[in-house]
Length: 84
Image 1 (tube, rainbow, N blue to C red):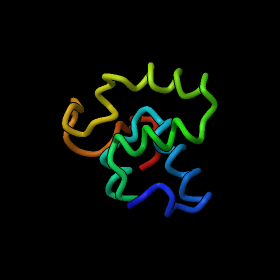
Image 2 (cartoon, rainbow, N blue to C red; image 1 turned 60 degrees about the vertical axis):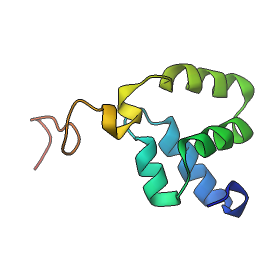
Image 3 (cartoon, rainbow, N blue to C red; image 1 turned 120 degrees about the vertical axis):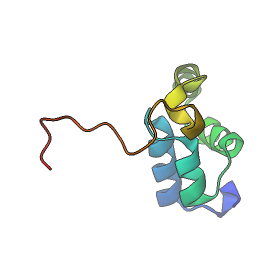
């Protein structure tokens, strides 16, 4: 998929997913067909310069942004206090 093919609603959702620390780039690829490099280009284009720099600094090397680097295999963390 190409970034120019996305509508504003999908762009907003991709930015939101990329901003979240626990959403891996693979999830964005599965849902929207964008590679990590394309997500970086999108974030650079649709965020302010300072927000983009802060985001890049935060996610660079972060294990939770890549499924293969995650320490857990299945699911997400769920607190014991959370309802079943």
